[in-house]
Length: 154
Image (cartoon, rainbow, N blue to C red; front, top):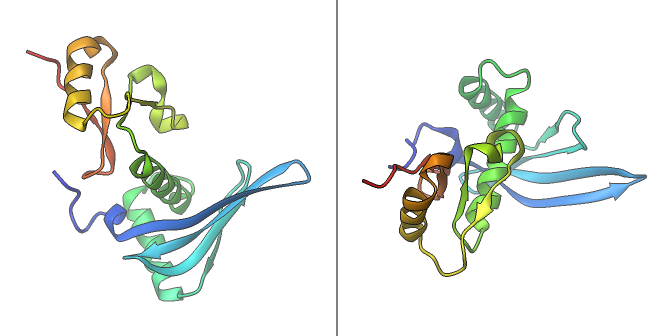
């Protein structure tokens, strides 16, 4: 089941992700997109706060409001949303099916595994349900832009 149109993930995206090392510090940047159209830039250093520059202030305010609505308890809701968008882009770009177990800490650190090349989403789902149910597997579903639970095999 795809995400509802009101959810920010289908509306927003990132492009042109870039990392640079300067004086031993890692910095990164990318363009913020709304329905494929750029409206700003975001970047940061190491684990510091993200920095935003909006080329379209109205779209920037809309983005910040969507982030606050999606993550009301977060100290920096826009940073959380950007991190999610970066993860969605990375996971959807994989050539192989991605999955994780509870112990992989996907939400905290992005740890995941990839299935053998050539296996389809359904094949990976069945394999996880049959052989690895005790690890509470989840598989990346591109239609939902999320890791979804794998039901144990009957």
